[in-house]
Length: 151
Image (cartoon, rainbow, N blue to C red):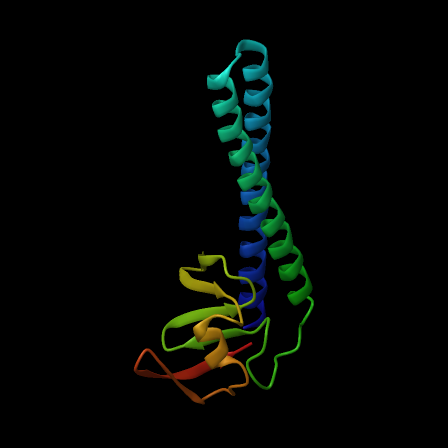
């Protein structure tokens, strides 16, 4: 189980690193476009184009910042090696046939042919899971589910 959990963390970390690299490349391209636009344009059309690119750059910067925070959080949570007695932040939980990692909310990843959903402890499901023990039930969206595994 701990081996699977380690793979889940590593896959999520790799995904965030790839995302960061793509965002950095996109940021570089936008900056180059802004500089090129400065050389070739003048007037209102230039100002509108530059403003749009600046907004795009700001959006990319926010995404990069969030990605870095998510990565730091994953690294921090990955240091927890003991199996917790109850579901807590950093725990890997199996509900029915689905796996959930309570860490950062970055969606679904695939590890060893299993889908794993990464969600925040503050998400609706995360809030229901916090404090539950193995074999306890939760009612999520009108459906009773059992905490099958906990790591």
